[in-house]
Length: 342
Image 1: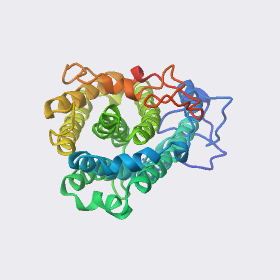
Image 2: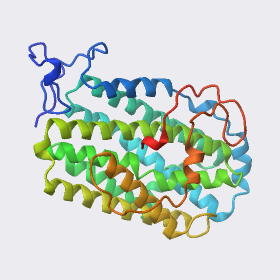
Image 3: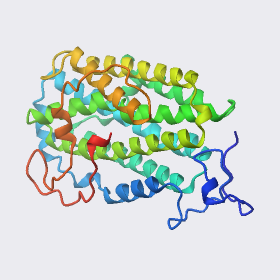
Image 4: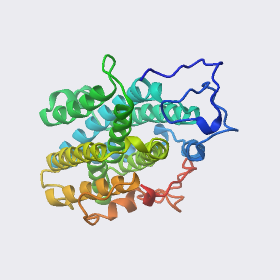
């Protein structure tokens, strides 16, 4: 499969012929004529969710950080470093490895918006790091120097490289598997870290950081929905690709992701963060994996219940016009999204 043609005035493709990948679009983004209504809905949601990191109050976090316990401070730093890596990777991955093969202009637009949001998250982490750290390089370089974190990052980066790197034979199945890999990234690999940040907020610490993570997670939910809708659209357009062999490959990817994220959650908490045990973390990631599988038409793998439902309450914006932790008006939060949908 070759990358899409950006300038394609000779295209004869009509709207019904449009495809997520493998189409022959003329490349024009026409918001008045779209095949995928869900893409327009997501675009409107992303636009409504626009927010800016410097508007989140971090003054209290600078004070709180000095009084965190050693395990809490270690977890906070590791989570920040991991999140910095993933959003930096995804900013480039979307534009360099995914969008060039997507032939639906309205989906191209959503991916471009997502790439901006990933970069905005990187700015968010910079605000957090600069607020609490006397040595910003220490946190920014942790993803290179911490052995466990490096192991996780290597696996994620290698997965993308194997599926979409230049020089490899790119085919329909590899592109589809890359969509699943992105679903896993957006729907699993952030969540142990997010939960750890909410645990600090629940205990009354680092409230600004917890609020920042809420905004970031709200964005990540739209990113997750974007890839799930892409996968489900491909299922309708190319049912021939959804073989038992493909399903097993997808399940192997999910099992490995659950193993990796559960291990990471145990590593950052070390049994010393209130409300978390290794078993709770593992079950939480398994629960999320089942939700993600169900969303793209596959049966659950683990069949477990949500072990920490309070996390969803901390993450949700639904029917809330105030800061969950402090009761302050959040007047830069215009959008909303149903977390039950993810």
